[in-house]
Amino acid sequence: MAFASKSGGGPMADMNVTPLVDVMLVLLIIFMVTAPPLTYPIDVNLPQKSLNPPPQTREPPPPIRLRIDASGQVYWNDAPQPITAIQNMMEVEVQRDPTNQPMLEIDTSPDADYGILAKVLAHAKNADMDKIGFVQND
Image (cartoon, rainbow, N blue to C red; front, side):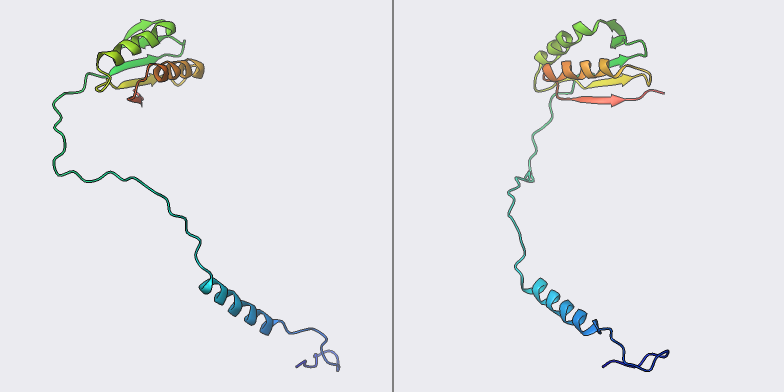
């Protein structure tokens, strides 16, 4: 029903939408409850718990410290090396024991050129190095 406004004596011409909103909310809830959930199965191969883990008989080799300074010089275990020789040195380390590789610890100066670091990472990828970490020495 329309009520008279305070300022005028005639009926209001606005439509009351509250019952319409109530009906729409009830319909929305009904559709949400009755609609089947859209689920897609995803196969995940999780590792299984082993009661007898394999023993670790080999100790990992000492890590390789690779440092890049602000001038772009690359140091392999504190010995300066040209960037072209780095990949060969990495390949030698990987071929010693491919299943027990040393950790490559890369330390860069904050002012170092990113291009040198990108080349070092590309050489490590090409040499199939698996263990690469970044360190920061203050």
